Amino acid sequence: MQLLAQVHDAIVFQAPQKYNPAELSTEALRIIESVKFNYKGREFSVPGEAKVGWNWGYRKIDKASGQVTNPNGLDKLSAFPSRNRLPPTPFLQRVL
Image (cartoon, helix red, strand yellow):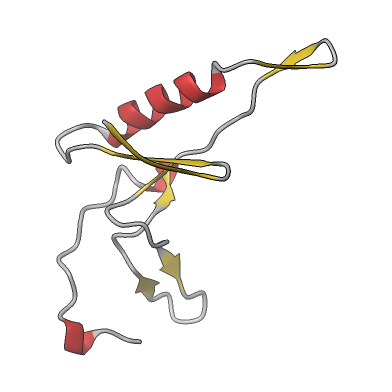
């Protein structure tokens, strides 16, 4: 796993496709949530959330048509394991 970026409250990793995203995300969340903070004598940690995808855009579903925009984009981990990577859409067929 390779750390790519830390932006505001997000940490971005990448890993080879052969690794299980659920296992990697669970381990990353365990590490992130193990960091303890102390404020005025009160110790706490910050909960995390994992999103997984093959690019940094978000996977979106149009509620009216059911059409998926950016099917290879980020989505919550719970929606990811059943997804397969789709081939890229030829540029001239993309809806802009």
